[in-house]
Image 1 (tube, rainbow, N blue to C red):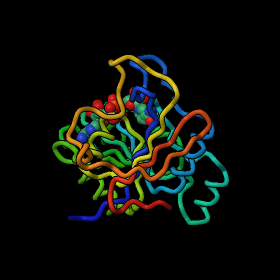
Image 2: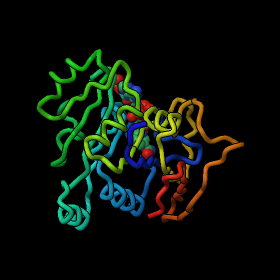
Image 3: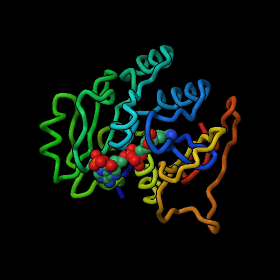
Image 4: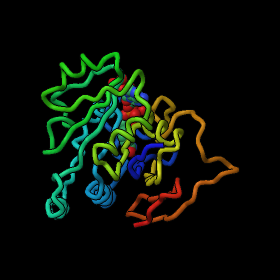
Amino acid sequence: MAERPYTLLSCAMSIDGYLDRASGDRLVLSNAADLDRVDALRAGCDAIMVGAATVRNDNPRLLVRAPARVAERAGRGLTPTPAKVTVTERAKLDPSASFFTAGDTDKLVYCASGTVAEARELLAPVATVVDGGRRVEMRDLSEDLFVRGVRRLMVEGGQSIHTQFLTAGLADELQLVVAPFFVGDSRAPRFVDDGRFPWSPDRRAQLRDVRRIDDVVLLRYALSTRFCPD
Ligand SMILES: NC(=O)c1ccc[n+]([C@@H]2O[C@H](COP(=O)([O-])OP(=O)(O)OC[C@H]3O[C@@H](n4cnc5c(N)ncnc54)[C@H](OP(=O)(O)O)[C@@H]3O)[C@@H](O)[C@H]2O)c1
C-alpha cells in the first residue's frame, strides 16, 4: 500500500454532537483560546482539508493567523499557511471564495472525473484541479497528497469528510472539542454520518488526553499506531 500523510482530524461539536445549526449563520462552537490552539495545529501541518460544502457554507479562510507562527514557518522555508485542499463532485465552487483568494499558498481541488473539465474552466486561475477518479476516494487523495509532499494533513470537516476518513481507517488522530451547549435540531449536521467505523464497543479508540480550554473540553484520541503525541 502506498504511503499517506499523518492525518489529524479536528472538529468542534455541541454537547449533543452537532457541527453546526440547521440553517442560517455559521455556528461558533469554539472560543478564543481554542481557536489559538487550532492555529498552532494548522501551523504544524503541510495541508488543511475541508469539504466543498464547508467552502460554500462557511467560506473559511483556513489561514495561520499568529505572526510568530507565520515567521516560524518562513524560517523553515514554508509558505505562511499550509496548502489548502478540498474535494467536489459537482464542481460548484466560487473562485472568489476565501478558500481560493486568501493566503499565499497552493490550493488543490480534487474533483470527480465527470466534472473535472467544468472545474478546470472555473477554477484554473485560482487552484490546481486534480482528476480524482469516478468518485474521489479519500485513500487515493491521501496518497496523491503524499506524492505532492504532504506529510502532515489536517482535516477540518465537515460531516461527510470526517465520516469518509474515519470509516476508511485513514485517520491517525482525532482532536474533538465539545462546546458547552446543545443544538437540539436533527436537521443540523452531526460530527459524523452513519457508517461502519473501525472503533466499536469491542475495539475502543484510545483516549490520550483530555484538556479543559476555558469553557470547552478537548478530547484527543489515538486512532492508529502512527499516533504521535508530539
Ligand atoms: N464544527 C466544526 O468543526 C466544523 C468544521 C467544518 C465544517 N462544519 C460544518 O459542517 C457542515 C458541512 O458538512 P457536510 O457534510 O455537509 O459537508 P462537507 O463535508 O464540508 O462537504 C461535503 C461535500 O464535499 C464533496 N465531497 C465529499 N465527499 C466527496 C467525494 N468522495 N468525492 C467528491 N466530492 C466529495 C461534495 O461536494 P459537492 O457538493 O461540491 O459535490 C459534498 O457535497 C457545515 O454546516 C459546516 O459549518 C463544522
